[in-house]
Length: 380
Image 1 (tube, one colour):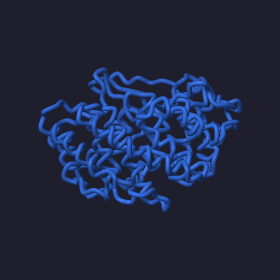
Image 2 (cartoon, helix red, strand yellow):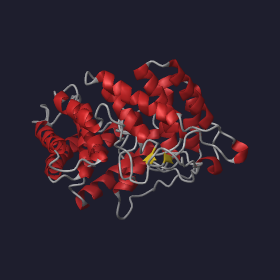
Image 3 (tube, one colour):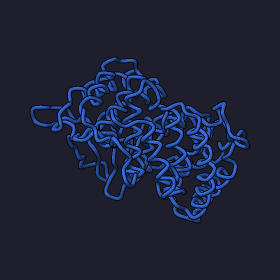
């Protein structure tokens, strides 16, 4: 490991000077504080948060879907900053009242049909309101959005679907169902949400296949299905965004909501099967990067270990942390640090620490690399 919090702090400073309104500066600074324990980064996070909240509210007013995702991340961060003892003056109160109103107005426009409600935006609004519980009583909006997005008595149209079909990994249906599981733990249409989660899980289970390593059939679940849930597309890829590891996490979490012992058995079967896949041919992994490289797998194995206590998953995490001994982490500050590069280095450094990474919002980094949040709702 040749990247240090000092080098990462220098990159953050350069990025902030070049792109002062970057919406994730506060998140980067907070994670640096977690990794280094230096209060200056905590203060940076609080100052960056002020600016990000104002900018995010403005962008939401113009229906920018990317900032719906940012709003959810800022809600996550605001909750944690309020529990820090070293608050700057004026930051002791909840800072999200204005952003709440911007989110409520956006939700109202979507629900009234004034503007179209694309699936990813609705997912992010659901995520924001879920993060705000119990600080903000946004239950009426959350219940209304759930009712509008998944109307009773109709065939379910999942919000993560694409025109070409339905992706099934954490960048698709698995991520959507993980978010709904979090909603299901709130007193908001609990029975309806449980029914949705059950239906989604059963749809996933219906398209699985038997593995056959000799024939090159490594995956139990397809990456995607067609618009009519036919023509499943299987691949050898195993990473954060798609593949069986995310489905294992979903099945474990679904068991926690639905209390179905068969889901726990299947979750373990799927999860342990992935541990047999360590080659590039069986995973498609050729870099240490997040989300589609070794760091994504290490993160997910750590989540599974924390969720289950199964030491086999700790072994999977350690394998991918040591699979790239010459990880591309710079020994000096790049001439022009990028947000994507800084995220990858923060995540890799966090993975090598005894604590920190699983407290970071799961979708950060992933959003920068894909069209929608990966693993939205993964962390609590």
